[in-house]
Image (cartoon, rainbow, N blue to C red; front, top):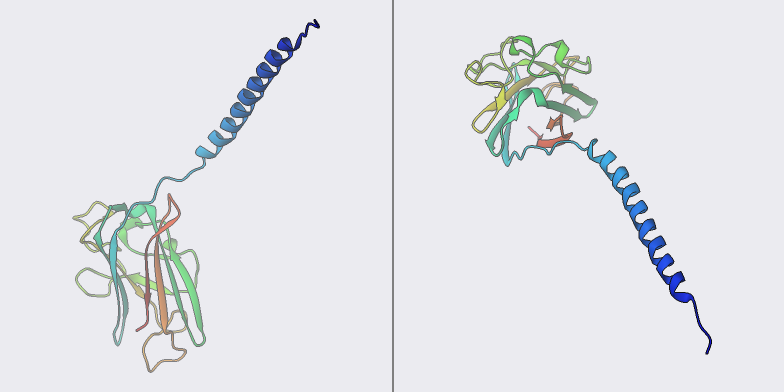
Length: 193
């Protein structure tokens, strides 16, 4: 009878396989944990918004109403506005909200093309010192259900004119509200007056 010493080899191979799995698991977990630190916080769930773009003889007002869903701190939003049409292609972002004194100023615009003119007052009058959220000072700079973001689109050479008789004439206005902490669009509207 021939004696075999193969049992020792199978034990060692099992130990080696377990060691390899443990090392791979440690490597993968270190790699994965490095990504966890870079993940953004989840975007708030703004369930529903409605938008309105009112073109009058002297003003062009954008209103975005928060209907339902999570509240959003105004300091955590950015508004991207893009006007386009024959001979018109202008894009601008409202940043660093709310601004000092709660008015839109040049410090809140990342591009200097003058597309966004000013805040739109909650009393219905054009006022560059008005707020982006209409219920100030009663609110605490939170865009929540029942509140409206308001601002105006500038017309003329630096803006985008949506009035029928004006040229160059813009015919589309896209407004996107972005949650900056998660980099997610929480509201988006396309207007064609």
